[in-house]
Amino acid sequence: MSDALFSLNADLAKLRNEGYLVQRFGGFLVMREVPYLNAQRQVKRGTLISDLLLSGDRTCKPQPHTVYFDGDYPCNTDGGTLAAAIGAGDGPGNIGHCLVARYRFSSKPSEQGYSDYFEKMTNYAKILSGPAAVVDPNATARVFREPEEEEGSVFHYVETASDRVGIGALTARLEGERVAIIGVGGTGSYVLDQIAKTPVREIRLIDGDDFLQHNAFRAPGAPSLDTLRQVHKKVDYFASIYGRMHRHVIPHAVAISADTVDLLDGVTVAFLCMDAGGAKRLAVEHLEAAGVPFIDVGMGLELVDGSLGGILRVTMSTPAARDGFRQHVSFSGDDGEDVYASNIQVADLNMLNASLAVIKWKKLLGFYRDLEHELQCSYTTDGNLLINGGQG
Image 1: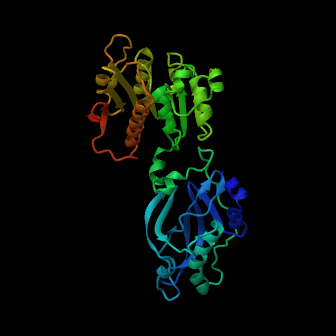
Image 2 (image 1 turned 90 degrees about the vertical axis):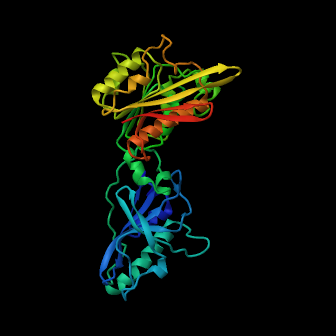
């Protein structure tokens, strides 16, 4: 994708053609080897980092007009700072992708801003390198050196959302995860909808059922009548959709059994979005033996006096805290003990149940703050009551 971006966009191609060492990392455009003077009038080289605004694989008019800088505070030839020229302020520090933003610069040429990324990046490079060129006439950002090969992304197009709002370093904590979603019905499909937008290494979908008309009304998206007529397997239907965004959505059109439970080998977390029964017990025992954390979801709704009410549940089990799991989760699908086994489901509660499960997983990885370290939470529709229980 990075090479394609530089060949498809004239402003990015011009930067490289004129010798600037530019690369794309996540949602950032990075220019390295930019010369500047430090307070001791020494020529140093730093890195300019700009947000990269894209529409698909095409660059848009740059927004915002500011950039980040990794280096010492840049100075004039007399040792005074360049703050008047670039409006320098402190940067946020670690912004992910092994990039550090020590300072933020602001130089806006006009009310209209920059027309493209060539104008933006070269303008900042000139401001910084001007004083350096006075001390050393050979100091230039046009180094005419090929950039190192960039690591491939799990996405088919650049994920700019995280870096745009400054959480790239947090999002990086999700990289390398290999996620299994067992059951891609009402709740599992919404788990997939959220996980597919994260940089996890792999997403395994495990479900042997067909995608039928009732599924269409409890899942994200809107399948056509023709799609429903084709009777796809659930995993194949969802893989075809989310595979357009994430490269590693892998469908397994089977139910969990003694013959298939090894599909869970190698995962780093699993979401159990399945009915109670022997298959759930097999999955849980296999994941426990492998030392893998997993999250189970449940929904129990009842139609009483003309309205629905009930409870959603999210229960997590980790290698350090297994004991409490069976206090909240039943493996019996037909003995009436599982209060979350009601067949009534609606899409908004499926979506909420999935969101609570994904948030719990992100807490486990440190993406979200987790002061209580709860292993169990339940949401009661009447009163919007959310209760935590158990600690890991």
